[in-house]
Structures are given as structure tokens and as C-alpha cells.
Length: 165
Image (cartoon, rainbow, N blue to C red; front, top):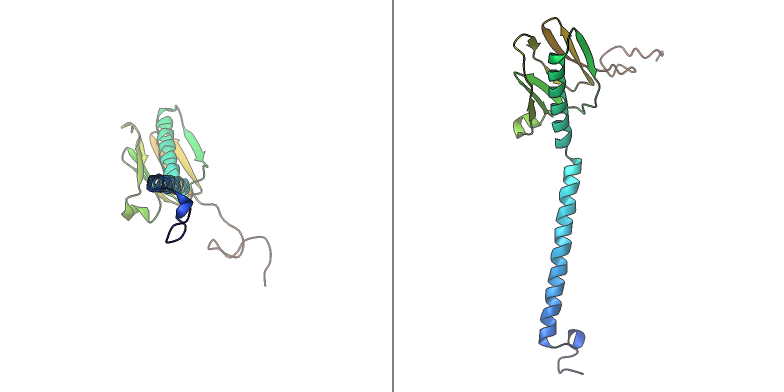
């Protein structure tokens, strides 16, 4: 069947053309929604929000455990702290990255503070491990940064055990 202006698209009637365009539109919407969903999931996977929530809650529960433990305690928390800043404040632990203090990405979690103990608050920047110490009625939190030997990269004279000229 030939038309005066040439062959029509799929040689169909006007009603069938409209159905075809609705199907194409639905396909485009489905692909667009799928792309947006995958992009959202990918950005959440790359984000550090889950890590900050985990570290804040885990350290708050650890402080509660140290308060409740009898006797003196020394605990070395060696979880991967991933360049986070740990800010121990009154009844709260905040975890954030350096640039997030102004941007509002601070994640905090409360802990139950015991008035019978003196808690020495600290702000730990990028610790490799956190050391909790409870001696008598004092709880101290300190950060520990590993020494990287070789070439003076950590500020020393390069105490790597090898002689360099």
C-alpha cells in the first residue's frame, strides 16, 4: 500500500501510531527510572554515611560498656577509622570528616554518662586506633597514629633501619 508522500511508518492506521508512541514513551520512562535508581544506589554505596553511623554507635556503646565494667580497663579500638574525626563531647560522640563540619555531615550518637566518673573529653583527628583507659574514677580517650617508617615521611629522620645516601 503506497501513499502519495511515500511509505508511512510501519504502514499503520492513526490509532496504531498512537499506541506505538505510548509504548515508546513507557519504555523511555522505564529506562529513565532504572538509570535514576542505579545512580542513587551507586552514590549511597560510595558515601561514608553508613561508616560514620556505625563508628558513632559502636564507640558510644563501647563507652557505656566501659562505664559499666568493674575495675580498671584498657581497650584498644582498632576498627578502620577511615580519616574520620572523633569528637567526644558531653553525653555524645560525633564522627565526621574534616570538610563536613561546615557542610553538616556530622553524625552523633549519645551515651549514658556516669557522674561518679570523670570523663576526659577529646577530639581525635584521623586516629589509626582509639585507646580507652579507665583507671579508678577517670576515663580517658586517646588516639593512636601508627608510625610509618622510611624516608622521614612521618616527620622523623627516616628511622627505617636502612642507610640512604
